[in-house]
Image 1 (tube, rainbow, N blue to C red):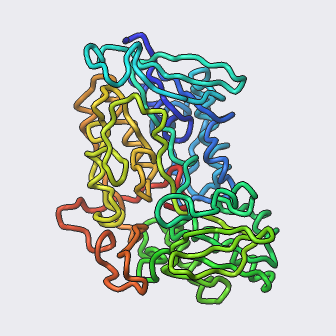
Image 2: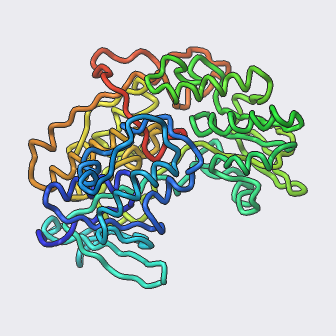
Image 3: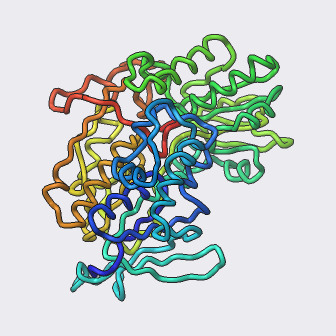
Length: 449
């Protein structure tokens, strides 16, 4: 198997970084990307500006691969998704050349001649990655290892409060009345004079609320309703000036100002049950019977979840709550951990019972809401070292995250007015947690969690 490539699923920031680290280790990467180019998920929010500065969005191995080609890293500023692609991801993909295959969708991952039930000789048997191409053809790709960096972008959480689409949600989406991406500036402007409902409490929702609030400022006949499943508490608008990522803190400050200025109205403790189409508009109803006025558009920004369907023949071990690797889950559970704190982790925490299979990046966090790019870059560095046999380097993971003051957990389920704020994941960090020493930057989730 030593002659086979390491198959990397996804040509986003972490998939490309994984390939760069593998090359440095003398291994051959093969990156399989369903989209037409690098960063295809980032391209879908290309109009949104990250709240992480340039130096925190560039992987060190990626930079080392690019620098001999005359590329220069940006040293300051906060790029948009488009700028991230054009000035870093696309050049990195070009440097990797034919090692990146576009228009190649992974349909399944298995072992050569073995389903998940067969144990004898499994670890010595190549992986087989089943792919379909944009021209309709199918093929199988063999690999010595598989790194799944496919992210979660294609799997948005629904508006329904119980984790499944609300009644009528799919129909509203099909009709184009409901979307799962913050509107572009042009789309936001086109909503002037209309009623828009924003569902969600994270940074994505704040981004949309701020943008739509500016539409209200220009056209006061526009109406924006922001629904939150929990009540308003001290952490609703994030860490503000205390956030060690200032641009992220500014999202909370600006969204709060939009609410206090009356440009945006909030409906708290609102758990969506159904979305009915009435004369081409969406009527959103909560589980407690409250109904919002008919909306011309509904923007659902409630986070994402992993697509595990193509790993059904793999022996993976996931936390039953977060759908994250069991050894990582306790550090990232928003119901338990202190905001912004995560224990250092790498290949050991990301390993599964299936030898040489790793899920990295945002997908490794399962349903946990906030993922940082530098966390992912450290993950792939450690995994590449492990696959190269440098176990000492793989274990040498040094990562502590900033005490951001931001929490995107569900909050106490039955305290709509925010009683006991500060309890749970937004409480003080336990003394056993590592102290924060440096801010990290967001990967595929720079607009929310």
